[in-house]
Amino acid sequence: MSTPTPAPLPVTRRAFAVAAAGLLFPRVSRAQPKDDDPPVSGTANPTLAPFDRLMTGFIRDHAVPGAALAVSRGGKLVYARGFGSADVDKKTPVRPDALFRIASVSKPITAVAVMRLIEKKKFKLDDKVTDLMGLKAVVGRGDTADERWKAITVRHCLQHSGGWDRDKSFEPITRPVQIAKAVGKKGPSATPTDVVRYMMGQPLDFDPGEKGVYSNLGYLVLGRIIAATTGGTYEDFVRKEVFGRIGVTAPRLGRALPEKRAAGEVRYYDSKKRTNWCLYPPRLDRKVPLPDGGENFEAFEAHGGWIASAVDLVKFAAAFDDPAKSPLLGAAAIADMWARPAHADTNGWHIGGGWFVRPVGDGGKVNVWHFGYIAGTEAVLVRRWDGTDWAVLFNTNDGAGGKSLAGLIDRPLHEAADAVTAWPDGDQFPTYLK
Image 1 (cartoon, rainbow, N blue to C red):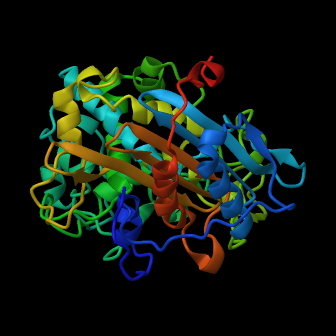
Image 2 (cartoon, one colour; image 1 turned 45 degrees about the horizontal axis):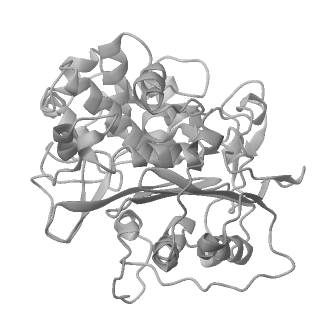
């Protein structure tokens, strides 16, 4: 995708969101291979060397411990490679199908699960979330719940217009101890349901539907709706009705403590080396790195709690390459998911239902994407208009100069794809999705 390069902008929330449109971040130099290049796993293909050159130079130049990149073309997995170390101390290399935390790339997954339930006629986009969740608000003594909560719809939550603005009030996922105490728990961690019930007792920051402001809370609300509607757990429904329908079995909700993580999952390295009191037993009496229990990761759930491989994510993205033949959603549901909200401006992109969307040309084609960022993890998932999709996952956050790795690598990935002159015919999905 060819796009003029504007002057570099600071990595604001808006800049981070629109970067995969190829508009904001400066080009990253492609260093030539060196003797100290990181180990690389997976099958090499000379025709896809632009991706190899990009990734080896990128993780070396930005001191990234490990990464994985998968690329599909026309629904076939044409590239899957791991770079660097899954565990630095053990010198374990990253495998192409290594599991990583994917942070907010979880949101498109939740959105698809919601749309599947809408297709099953379990509820509608404009149904009220308080009716569907069936939860009781946690309201402080002498306070009353904000009546505007009753106006919030499923559509509002999908499109980040439910009424929450963390810059005006606060980000509830960063207050697990306070929330746990408010709901009457003895431990310091809060569940997704705890977070939602607590926030149901807090005032909204704006009227639902008035505008769009990126919100993690809205996706925790959607997770509660999925659980309430299905009578099971959010995770079970997604694994069966989203990933199961495309033959993907590895993704699951991640665990905070290293010893409880899934087989094949990488270690995480916060570039800022932040610590906090552990929120999970048996380490409640000590400080730990943020990725290892120092933040309430297990409550990120529907907005940011999944682990998956780059291969898994590309298979998910490729399910929408041809909306008329998607194994996950019908064409009408996909159109609803990617539709421009009524409150959106005309800046060339918009936040749809769980995806960022940028129309390409006048033929109805779109680029859709999402980034993910938490301590110890960054992720990028792109489904491009031309049938080329990719996912890149890192086991750290921030690169040189403290800039987002996802933002830094976005444009170079588009350029690497554009530099490929002959795409291979084979399909590696059967190799990794057994």
